[in-house]
Image 1: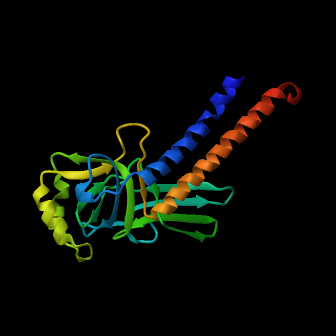
Image 2 (image 1 turned 45 degrees about the horizontal axis):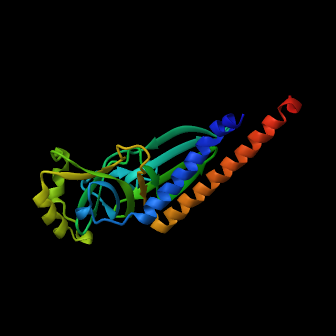
Image 3 (image 1 turned 30 degrees about the vertical axis):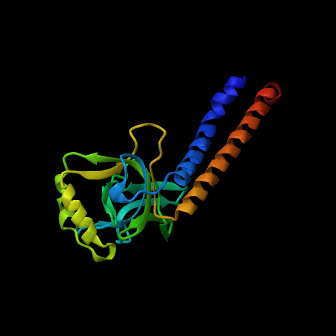
Length: 234
């Protein structure tokens, strides 16, 4: 019976330790400049940039963005999701040392911008990461060879507010490659994107870990109670 209890409640403990592991990675991993980031697990702080004239738009709001999540909920009879969308398009971030691509597929994303609108019994929820917004990324950096054709616009990119003269000059010497951040090929390593402050993200991860630990111990107690009183309950 003890093995049954552990088998049933173990996933809660695994999730709790994983949330705690993410918080520790964020605390312990030093921030790397985009242009000097090493291959592998990295922490990047940069700003999102727009490279073309047709950026993503937040559904319903029409706000330019690099990523969004959108949900429509129907409350006519009970809460029911009737539409759910999330963008997985590649976007770009930059600092004074370089430009990097980000593929948000499989990332755990924590946007700072959230809003909702209600019309009758329908609720619309929107979350997004805007353009020229400070962003935190914890993920796996690697280099693409050869450089994708769709990224040629990087050579011509000019935007004054992030001192791109330095970026474009540096990137002009790196036309043969493009650095990209994705999910790690090794299981267990985090891939987190956040437009919130780093200390808020750490607090959120630790708080979630605490809740999962509480859930684990509560589940163990409930399982012991059910097993010990099985005959009297049924």
